[in-house]
Image 1 (cartoon, rainbow, N blue to C red):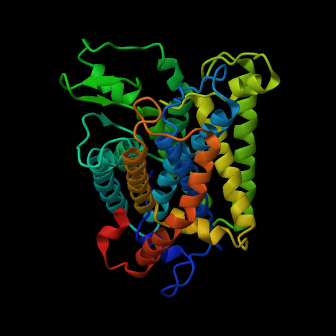
Image 2 (image 1 turned 90 degrees about the horizontal axis):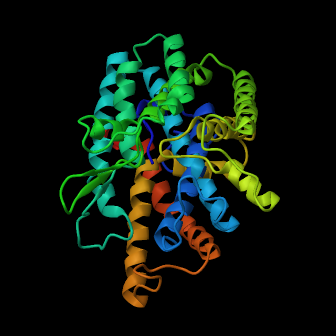
Image 3 (image 1 turned 45 degrees about the vertical axis):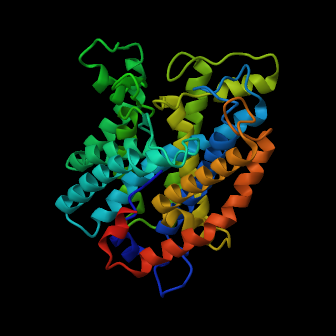
Length: 404
């Protein structure tokens, strides 16, 4: 999970003060970092689940008929991660452009996009916890870092559209891409690899031993990053805090109400929901939304909640918890890589001690253990992340830090 955490963004931040001073949230940028930080913790919880509870798999969408409620709602927390990061990446690109020319923004988006794509197939590919420490990955899973990288490259061109064109194209992609769902290509089609990367989550066989899985088809994410960029004026210098919060509340409420209305109609935007044996199962079915690629109905509530959270964080900027969340959001790529390798190390230690106690995997017995482990990891990862976030604020002369 990554976002544009740019060098000049700090110029607009009240929290970028003297060395060692806390990263504050008394600004529009502080609320962005706090939101990014809280979804980083949701991501940590989900990756802890993927590491130590992988023996109990979930489907896409989560199977509301068979998945236990505890596992279902634990998995549900992760739905906010990718949409929040992609939208905030677009927003951060706009903020970067407030102190840079468009050509400079294009260059940064393009080069950082390539950097993220390279990162996905190297450092990140080696990091996934169930991969033994000493062996390189046999298969490649093109996940969220890859999708953000491709989306940034697309955005590097799309920023030249007029703002109305950016909004129109972003809305059209997000609202209409589910009409493409019936288009399913097979490996014998020359367009299959491209379509697998754009909209059809699938496997591309490179050899008898190696494959690529396009976990995050990129088309809807391009629409979302474009809308994040187009929403930039909401966070510009000339928009007051009160006006921004009011608009965020309206947008967030509209997206949530729109989601409920379209979902109740049960004919477009995602797979149909069903009336379960219990009211809880019905609610679970209603909330079981497709993430790969993200459906219209997946993006509406996740982005809507993100808008409401931004308004809430800015309204309560003096809350003592928010500066600590902002540290996680101020060094997202650093946290992402470090937490993956910490989980990888813990998994391999557990495997060495207990062996494959869950079939071919090592794992824990319940979702409660997953929550407990994530809770223990949060403070352990907080201190190195805070150190790196402060380093980024302090050492603006180190150009490559902005890529992390």
